[in-house]
Image (cartoon, rainbow, N blue to C red; front, side, top):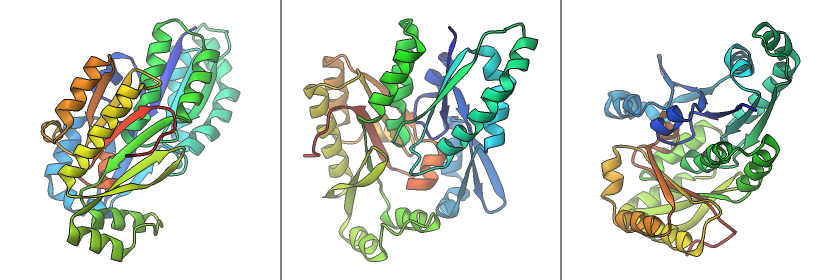
Length: 313
């Protein structure tokens, strides 16, 4: 059985990994005033955006995910011919309509694929599964990395499906933003009042940085630390402790809203990489997607892994 994998462009994994494993992308369009940029997970495009004057207006950007019709067309034009079973792994449904759009598209796809496959000389059934990763950014990457491993090991669709759905319930993402005002503006643009003006002003004045935890579709603060670098160091040290305690997959993912050398220079980063090497945990680091950066601001850092429930300490 030919198994295909699909992610959306908010999934922060290296482009080289996505390309080498033929992982298809559901792109997200970023619109700022009259300018539009389609996010195809190209780090060069993302960094060019970051350096341009457009980035200064990023807080007012609008993100437009693939519609039901666009997802349907992608599958019917390519994926139903190339594969027999496809896993489509999306950003958490609580933060984006991509999951629901993919679910709706799946009904049309499964109703229309037979004639197209038959014309291509394939009369066997086609199936797909839309999986909510229940997380954001680099934490989304845990599932596709595991899917690649299972596919390479020759596992069947049923086992891969069960494993991905189990991991989605145990994936943790930790994020530290640099600019609370930016986070507040983006939240208000999307109708989210969780970051008040007072807390943003106070946090900025005192240089307090929250550590946000993404887990099972919810995102909320688990710590407040003075200074971005001390906060990053604390998060990296915590991630290292979780690696030593044992992860559910040998994978740790990282993304950064800027040049990766800036992230690599943060305190605690080198030690985290050393711990991962000691524990045979593979590290995937990538420039944060354009979609991610317009939502959480430049300079944000995220770490993701799958583990049993725990507390940030």
